[in-house]
Length: 138
Image 1: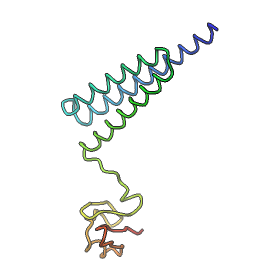
Image 2: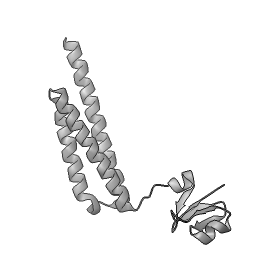
Image 3: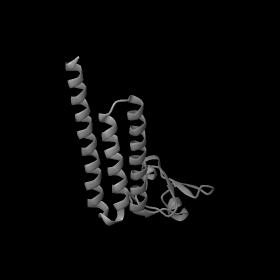
Image 4: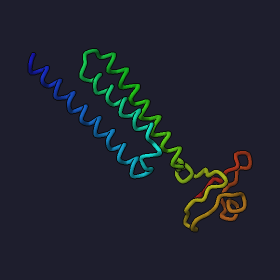
């Protein structure tokens, strides 16, 4: 019985160390990209959430752990989306599936191409007037 408790405690400590390492990595990556001043409130929320999650992991009650973990990961997801929004990162589905909205500049085998109706037709791609996008065909 004591062996089982020791193993559980070791697994909890490993999980907490991994969680804290993830939060610190997120923190340092964000600092190197955006600077501390832009995201001060975000860091405070993440650290408080991580502390609460650490507390929940070490206490008894599986439901409490599940709820706090779910809330923590929602906070992380929301924060990641917020950082992507303020940094101007756009998903690059344009390159992956070929549907590029007008106004984007993409790097192609022809060099950098500004997406508009004229350029789309010039490179023999398909222009969709309704959606105002170009279907890039390689």
